[in-house]
Length: 139
Ligand SMILES: Nc1ncnc2c1ncn2[C@@H]1O[C@H](COP(=O)(O)OP(=O)(O)OP(=O)(O)O)[C@@H](O)[C@H]1O
Ligand SMILES: [Mg+2]
Image (cartoon, rainbow, N blue to C red):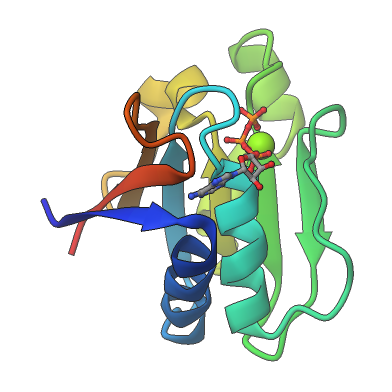
């Protein structure tokens, strides 16, 4: 898989370009430990998609919905997901079939329920370079 070690400004530029090329329907799984930069990357992707409203971490709501010129964007953070029933309550099946752009932080929490057709983005801290992250992506 391609990867790059990016400082914040370059990660944001990468996310904007990724978002600018993204069309619905799409399901993007965004992995990485706490503070790796998942929400930062989602904000950049949304910027590239043309989302004009504020993009904030859906920590408690688990899902936020934004409008964009390329259709509805759903932003999920499943860190606090309790179980599969809560996933169902969120309208997971509708999210998979709804034809929107779905950006998911902590997809590990729903591992068995992720669609086969998805893009994977992964972020990791670099011990020797605290201002950079290793970004890995599926082509
Ligand atoms: N190269 C970089 N790429 C991304 N974020 C960086 C980078 N350097 C520093 N940061 C900072 O790291 C923090 C990442 O926080 P962010 O909320 O995006 O992480 P997260 O992966 O969404 O965490 P959580 O698991 O809590 O949802 C931000 O404060 C960001 O400015
Ligand atoms: Mg986050």
